[in-house]
Amino acid sequence: MSYNREPSEEEKNNWHNDPDKWIWGMFYYNPEDPRLFPPKKIKEFGWTTNFANPNSVLVMIILILVLLIFILFAH
Image 1 (cartoon, rainbow, N blue to C red):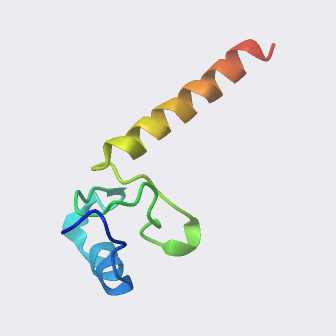
Image 2 (image 1 turned 135 degrees about the horizontal axis):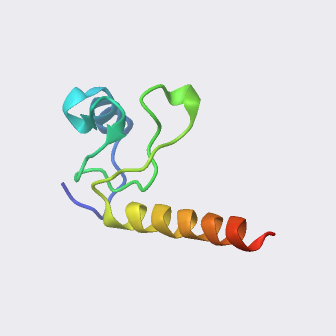
């Protein structure tokens, strides 16, 4: 798969419905998917992190650190 193009809706739906792309049914892991935050298994619940994409993991770590710093220094 080429990372220079947007995956088709059919590809996205196939990935989303493939149980092999979901670790324990709740963690999305798909190295073929370039999206940082694909929809959750139940799409109405929002988005999740694509744990196979290092950039999305980095964004999540930064977000968690910012939130922790805010909580620790808010007092």
